[in-house]
Picture 1 (cartoon, rainbow, N blue to C red):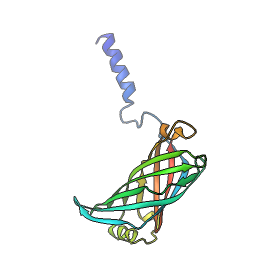
Picture 2: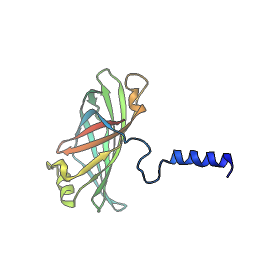
Picture 3: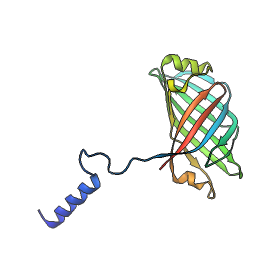
Picture 4: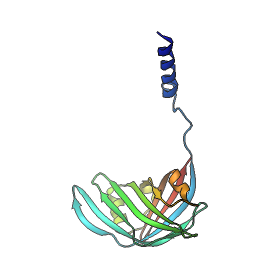
Length: 176
């Protein structure tokens, strides 16, 4: 084996991490950033399309509160949903926030909600359902002008949703 081959092999093993020993870097942590309380209108049912029950839920307003951002949810956004027969609901919400200093932030928030058929129907009817009975996670991303909130573009986020009859609470976490 030549010196060049030995160095290349050693570099590849360092980059790949030790086999079977676990991750190459420490696990990321989460830091709570803020909660969006999105007020919503009743769902518009489209019916079954391409094997899934399609719905649209308009966002009519709301608030943003937390240690990293405060403000309001602007009316006019919405949540497009496809409820699949296997208990998975694919969601994609798009809306705007206005911070206390007037900065407008565009939010695109895709995710999944997973529940039993009974829980899905209870949520669809607008009933209060214990959030421990369903899995509701999203991976939001943000578009915002340079300034005090451009940190939103410079980090990854995860969020957890809680559906209530006339609103959705979404807790946003920065992945560190």
